[in-house]
Length: 274
Image (cartoon, rainbow, N blue to C red; front, side, top):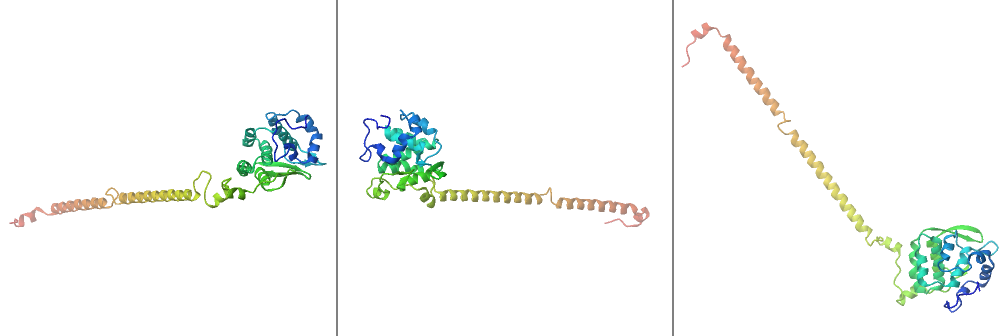
């Protein structure tokens, strides 16, 4: 009973959901110790704890031994959780291996339109993933992993079900055009809807305004300096006027000294002025 699909499960692509995994790999999973010890009586809720303990993704390794990731995938196919639960798995971006597990399950069981709508947003996720294969461990990323799910025929040593091309779905108006970040970057658009060109223009305007303000301030400071240099407080005219007054006072004093130096006899002999 532990290896049978739950009663009432819906057929996926016209067959038992567990049959999406190849027979050889499926039998090796049934014989593995991890399946017998940790995957017994798992539910849609308790499988989350096992998914959080994952350290890598992959199909088989070594002597055709199945990975823990593959065992949990087969368990999901066996218990067949509801669609809302799987979408919540996919939205848990802080748990990347749970997200990777939900992504491959959605790719294998959902319709083509739902696959594109749910998995394409993950192309913006650049978290690192460890991939275990026959040669050992390699490093990959979530966006590369999702891209392989959408384009390659075999992922994690499992043949993916046939997926209708996106171009065909767009021609039939089943799905809208793809939102590409690269295309938005080439057109100068950003994520918040504003264009980089408008931002650059606003920045250039603000810079030009700052420059004009700084220039006006420098001109005003120069004008103030010039006005101060030509003001009567700092002008040399006042100093010159002082020298003139001093020269006048000096001439008066010399005139008085001259008058004092004239003898009284001369004053008597000189005729009075008419």
